Image (cartoon, rainbow, N blue to C red; front, side, top):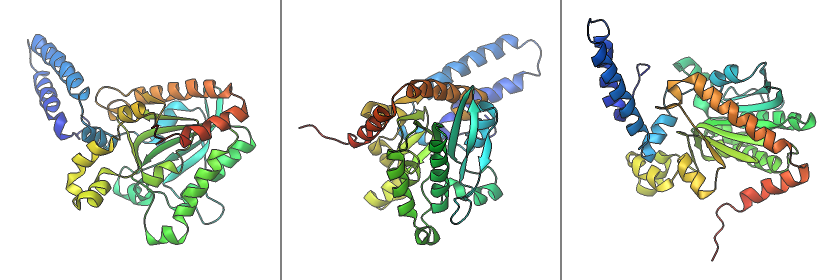
Length: 313
């Protein structure tokens, strides 16, 4: 279990510990096999019946793969580009050019950190305005060279600090939305883990929006919602249920287009399989989008977002 597990995973952990204890003993092969079979059945039962808060926990799992974990497994020659050409470089946003099985693409992704030092350097995946402006710079460069854009979302939200507000946080997000609506190349959006608030939507306007199976996508985090509605952030579980923020919920509501399957137990269980699934989704979607005329692509993109939340009486 990678040394880290969630509360609902404890029954699985106990079984796996028993298996490890028996491995060094003689004549217990049948018992080990029985326990392995039992563990696999238990995994399938637990992970196929997760509630919304448990999906949020998996989306935030400390061992969940981030874009820089997946890109080397999916791309042949990723070249990272830095800076917004106005203020500086924001490490919370990773952007550049890469090739995926013959598809030359621009990539814009949000990156958290593993250890304390990297978490601080990348601001826990919360971009400043210069991060969003760097993202837009790369997107415009992609349009100049007719490259499709793939964005990867994993953020608790845009950084809410005073310095970010002074440098125009809301303006940077709004500008990205405006420019992405008419960017003349295909845009594919993938929510890898957390997709919260304006930090997510700033690079989330695209022709197709896909979610990994255990990711979530919401206008606000469950804790933020609970603090506003009930003045109590500990009601995050109730907020997650009310918000309907899982991939399955949003597919039903028509907010996203498709769900990328994860390994049993979550993406952190198998980085290679996760990368393989994400790569397959990217190639398939780009093949579909590349055949559409530019004018139809832009019209459908705008209409896709305009009809969200519409009510028919």
